[in-house]
Length: 399
Image (cartoon, rainbow, N blue to C red; front, side, top):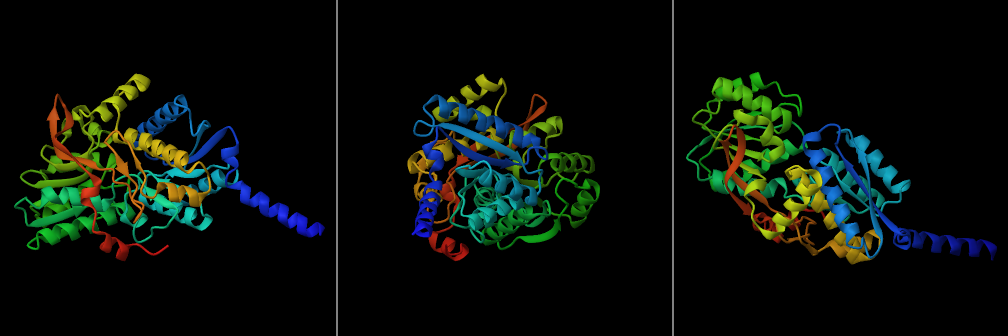
């Protein structure tokens, strides 16, 4: 009888652990990102989620409970990210995990979440695998995927007369995924295209001279670029010096984001077709409210990372509020089909693949007053750039 009572008591204890945070006066979210490796993006990202936390708690928190974000640096290493995730779950008793930047790290944390049955809201990783081929019921993603951004860029790129194309991309999950989906979608629209060269520099360690020389030797009429950060600066500088971009069209993922465009300064190449964030040209009420609050708090303009950090925690708070629980199954049920406001307008977390419908701005690079800007930009709704449900069901494993 004594053993029975002990067993029954343990069962009750385990059943109640999922909601322990809801019984306390605060709720914790565990946040992981590559702060030391990629500060150009992650520092504005941190400011974005800090603003979100401040606004959430000022308006009553999560069903009256204070929201706390416990943040860890993954150092750009998947193993470190999984260690951080384990510490946040086991030691800090977080209600969910959020964040990550690099696609390989996002996949590592997603795998951890699936194995440990922990809710994970991926903020930035763009690989299609995270919601499709390696998708799982515990992982949702905020940012528009490689497929979505490629489809947006292909819409403009397919109108170019160029037939001979080369690609330059970092040799890891994100770059490989972006090139593969762009080539697929572009070739479907333009079967006359020939892919004449591929360059795969290591992420963060591009040797730009040989890369530019190899692409020039292939004599493409257009180039797809997927490099970002310091690699992008080196590529542009070397490409400008050697005339690689002269009379050639360039289509480029992410280059219109201020964190990557600003460092180019007066070296910014003009006329590239890019995805990005022209914060200075967005006049919607939702964005103007965000911009005013961000500038008031930080005395600085936002980057795309600021939007991602802000919306990640705003979305997490909406999920927790609706679920009124920290049970992962209840969080999943609350998120599937959930619509939430954002600085870019309302977005929805789709039930079919756990992808949000957050979109992106597409435009062209230009020089203004000695610095790079995005011009001729327009917002592309994420929901307009996803495959049919039947196709997604083939791509995503059954839960």
